[in-house]
Length: 253
Image 1 (cartoon, rainbow, N blue to C red):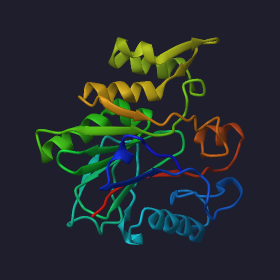
Image 2: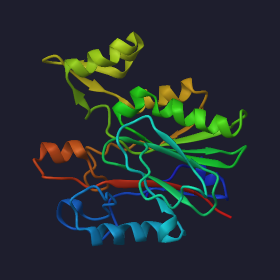
Image 3: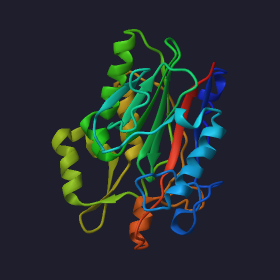
C-alpha cells in the first residue's frame, strides 16, 4: 500500500495506491488482482475487491470502478448514477461521502485528486492515449463546472518508469505532430527507438491545468514485480494475461 503525504494531511479523506500484495489470486495474478476484465477467476477478483472496500472502510457496493477504454470521458458520480454498473469512462469525480472511486492500472498512470475548497474528489486513468486526447483537461473542467474557484491537489501514483517505456518512431512522431514541445518527454536510444517519460508528461498536463500542488509516488511498475502488475512486463515474459492494481480515494463523514 502506498500513500500521498499531501493527501494524508486531510482527516476527511481516505486514499490508497494498493500494491499487488495481500490478495487471493494465484499464479500470474498473484495476489491482489482487481481487474474484472482479466481472465482471473471471478471469485478471487471479488474477494480482492472486498478486501479493498474493507480497507477503505466503505460498503462493498460503494467501491466504484469504471469500464476504462483509454478515452477522454469523465463522469460525475452522484445519487442518480451510483447504481450504474457500467460506467464507460476514464475518470470519475464525486462529492458523495463514504463512496470510494477507483482506477485500475498496469503501467498506466493512476491520478487521484482532491479539491479542498469544494470537498470534491476525483480519479483518472491516464494511459498515453487518454492523456494525449484530453482526459486530464476534461477532468479539471468537470471540477470547474462544480465551482469556478478550485484548489486541487493531485497525487500521481506508481506507473511505468521513463527507463522502461520504450517506443518506436511512429509513437514519437505522433506526439510531436500535436506539439514539438513534447520532445522533452523522449530520450533517443539506438535503432530509431525512444524512451518515453509518461510521468513527466502527465505532470506537465496537470501544471498546464493550473494544478501545481502535485505529489508523485515514484515507483516503476515495470521493474518492481514484487509490488505491481505490468502489462509490458507480462508481454515481455510472454504471459497470456496480466493483473491490475487499484488506486482509490474516498470522502469520509
